[in-house]
Image (cartoon, rainbow, N blue to C red):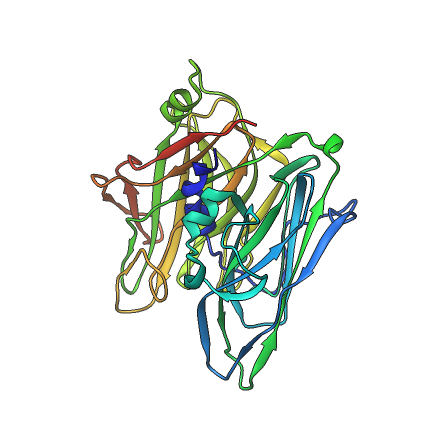
Length: 353
């Protein structure tokens, strides 16, 4: 059922906006008490040089499944962002190390469909940890390879030749309590006004997708374990909430941020749905330029979140071709408010193992 995460290609897309601090670890026993470590080959960058569409891989040579409770990356700079997946070791076949993605037919959606999403590095994060509550894991099958699609930029005044270090915190099978599935919401209709603050919301009713996908009569309960928000330089706010049938909302995460902040949040204990039938995502922007910031890479913007839940499905909630942004006036401080008219591009796929 690996086709599941063509929709999580959506996911790992979430090339988050990060900083030099890490997220996801708290007090108590280290999630890396038992771990696998790897140092990827250094990549040389001249002053001002930018390198994209480069891949790196690590063949795990694992004879048994790995139950991953945490992932940590560290680097010495220049790593603008990187997206990491796992899949069969024969996919994108060739020597490990650094290689041109196109030469081996790499595409993120193919990598995700072949295996699953492992980790997304926040933008320019020197150190970052993604970890889950005790006993919650991603399962990497036997004979797997980790592949990263990396994007590097040298903003310094001297050449750099830096590596990325990755560590997988693994636990024994007998300690596994729950296997996690990726989810995401993506508001691709945003259009942040020039010289203005604005907030864009999407309220997605997920009940029919859960019922139809899992072939059940009632909306199942689930828990969310990790949330990574994503926007670019003009993003300054994120709110993710459960929505109930009566229209009431219950906040999962909410934060204001500035460029460089880590946006990944470990939920421990995980946040239960408690009868919720949908989710609402709101992103805020402070656009101080003379250009409207629509969805896109580079100098454009995004409004998204990626996370993990314990339901027997994965989903990607996003607008369909008929869905539009609806102006909702202004709030008490003059921020322009917009709502998405629907989430008719949503995809849900069952995962059972």
